[in-house]
Image (cartoon, rainbow, N blue to C red; front, top):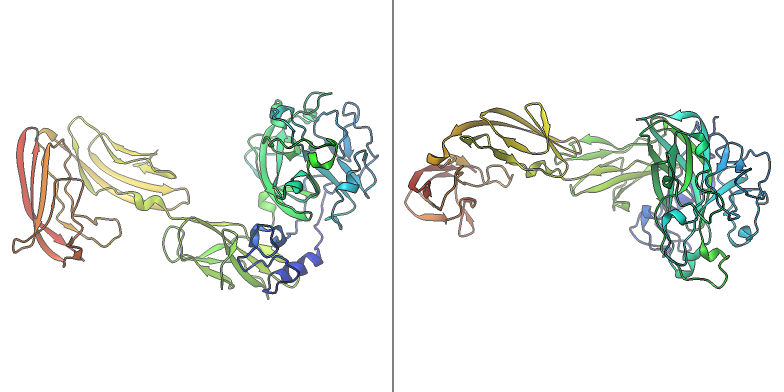
Length: 529
């Protein structure tokens, strides 16, 4: 069944207005790094600054709930758990929940929810919508006994294992108990899947609550997102991961346990509920979803000089954001990243007809620079040695074998490729020779380059055997001592009394004891600048 989002002109015009620097009626300005409307949210963290996207094609039938053959009013769940055409109640319960609305009257509204929690008009699509609920308790109870409401649909074609799908929808938060405490909390919307369409509704009949679907066989969490709405319709999406073929989905709250609330005088009032309204649901393969991506124009996230490129829109105006906060003056089609600390970048593009939000682009410092593997080393006879330890997010390819750390057990020539989670790579070539460490000699480099690139920055000896005593001294060619250390792990950085020494030849003298024998090593070292 095909469907298309309406372009909501008033929302587009509102967004264009908000992107200016004029504060009107304390509305949120979306590019000034300030909380203009006093709701505690800044720039893209505020739903007022959200772009709405247009989607065509839909794997769900009756995604806006307009088609229905009757108004369910008894909610017995045993004989009739149909909400609207193709949609069913997700779980058994003995609570009369108001789940389906059409023209605001096709519902059983014993709690007068439409008087206490009226939806915002106009609806995103048509005249129908549904609600999902996550009810707090006045005392701690297990999640499996919580009252949560879901809607489910048996799909006409299964979601295929290993493929990625995206669900887009509009959500609107009504009045709920968190208004009384002066803080608006986000609500998590989750999607669960099952191979068996007969698994809907889930749970046990005639109980107060059944919690979430994962309490019952075959149900798998496919994805979830947090929605923050303060009485306005918010468009958002969830990317679904499909571990096995899925024939039916359920949409509702996740399996989190809500905190207990203070008991109200009238426990049937809206003060006991978290409720969200949903409308205009679209499910598509992610590859068919209209994402807009930032690309790299120059450099890379693995090095300096990274320049990001936003999609081109004729007569579009641009604003770049770092971690959802506007970057002052970043209003071009490109942005040169100056900080490689872990951050997420995206751009908002505004035209006369719509606004477009790009997908997040992650920039982070690579841990590849933390890896130091020498070109040559010695391996003690009959022993192994660790060349590079395990680092978070780093994998190694050692002569074709994928490992998390590099340990060498035999002599030979090694090509080591280190790769981080962002695809950045660094290659090392290493020659390992065997040495009798009972008679081992200290390994001393013949040159070093203290230029701050974390490669060969120190003049430092290596000793691949135990040593009870060690002393290293460095002199100028005229015999002036400029460095001394008794710690073999401490090297000379090319300075003396805080001043950089000039490039040239220096003399070293090392005394150490190994296997009960006192040994001396001396020679020259070249400092390169």
